[in-house]
Image (cartoon, rainbow, N blue to C red):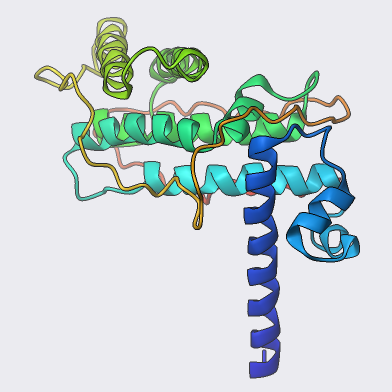
Length: 271
């Protein structure tokens, strides 16, 4: 690629990122159905055709916004390799709450799954869940490949995290730190249950701290963001379709070398 092509690619990426940043602010204050492509183009100061060029449709545009929001959370959750294992797990809990509060509209869309059964939104939700479970497993056991009983237990805990977070966003009656401590306590119970059912995978020794780390980088906040997505965006209309199959659990033996980590999931553009 010559220098002219590189400059063109850079400008294209910057323009696409700017459109996503504009859309994130719009959908934070206005429901999906209430915004037309003409409205979006007017606020972005571009021709409507440019949005279709990058995202194919309004739904594709909205999915790109949701996926971009999730990418910042996954970056945060998978970082902190220099932290002690338990602190890395707690960092993931705190990062999840930060992501939900900063990107409330996107978070609600992911957790509720859109209208009916949206396979692309469910794929995003699966990616978030998998990263959280893998990060917790790495903090608790030093590896991401865990037996099925451990994965099922952590998935149950993850579902409760989603429900508690939705309720917290709706009422805002409990302090952020209290919610984090509640989820950490529940995680400790889940890890102890795994150890009782699978003695070869005992819970980490010593009590988990009752409060998440006090300082977590705000990597989940979008560049140029002016505040949390305070209003819930409307659901994404989509055709029904099967949910993406989850990766099969791998039978493992403690102490055996962990398999190589796979690349992060990339989602198809919405059509």
